[in-house]
Amino acid sequence: MQTGSTVALIVAAGQGTRSGSATPKQFVPVAGRSMVAHAHAALSAHPGIDRVVVVIGAGQADALRAAIGEVEHVIGGATRRESVAAGLAAIGDAARVLIHDAARPFVPADTIDRLLAALDHAPGAVPVLPVADTLAHGGTALGDVVPRAALVRVQTPQAFAVPAIREAHNAWDASAEATDDAQMLRAIGLEVAMVEGDPMLDKITYPADFALAEARALPALVSRSATGYDVHRLETGEELWLGGVLIPHDRGLSGHSDADVALHAITDALLGTIGAGDIGTHFPPSDPQWRGAESGQFLAHAAELVRAEGGIIDFVDLTLICEAPKIGPHRAAMRSRIADILGIGERQVSIKATTSERLGFTGRQEGIAAQAIATIRVPA
Image (cartoon, rainbow, N blue to C red):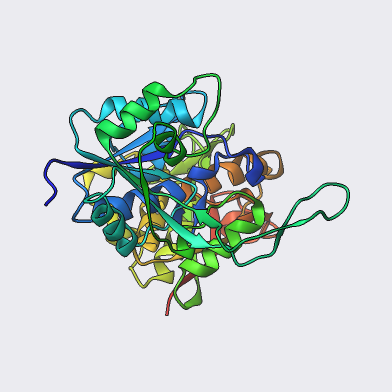
């Protein structure tokens, strides 16, 4: 019978250079949320785990907060081994630890069950899968085949008795690197048990892995699109905010919030995709707390509601209707800001501008109008 607490360490301090993304891969969205958020949610939800600690790199605290919120974390080191050591130092007198790579976002509960059960009989346990492919030595030409009958693929999380894995780390030659913690335990002569792994735990490393992981993880999805439309009056003495960007102009848009018609239109479009009313439903203009509010928080709220429904934001298309100012010089900054708020790539945001040929209120430069369409996927 196990006693003492069980802690999960999520190692998320890397830069993920092989993933092809400018963003460290642990913070890249897969199936609607970042990889580290998926892993944290799965480990936190397991009844056998008492505490989850994320090990991040220096300067990544804001990215972690944006991905998950305020969660317990520590700063890791320059290598994976150093990051794990920092995590082990932070968990106090815990009895057991599961060490997991954030690049494996989907953690089946039954795999955790098997790992914890194995610790009743061994100081360490790892999930493994058989090798199905033919293995051979490489080089300029195909070399000899390597017998695969006794080979396995080793995954994470890896489970350990805390005193044992700390001893293994303390004994390890600091001039050498370890690809995982199980080999460090074996190096001091301790047993590592094997339990059945899961294809869902396959590591995401290269660009093609993201699409494969998403296909595995997602339920049957359906596509939905909805539109949004907003208008605000131009007035002297007001700032002009469009698409989350402050634009120099002789007049600005007037409204209860910062009157950013672009973000308001996109917000309504996203709310429409999940049948969640409109912006006034969630942020009524009669409520004084929203006076002068930055509209990015409205858009972020709508995006979070979409994700809470299991939705994935695929694309947002915005059209601004005005005679002035010129939108072109600010389009790139607006795309970047909108993508950042929504947690999507800039290529998933389109911004266009047109005039009304001097007809109507926009033609008379009395105001600016915006219309948007958002396309998402949600579980069927």
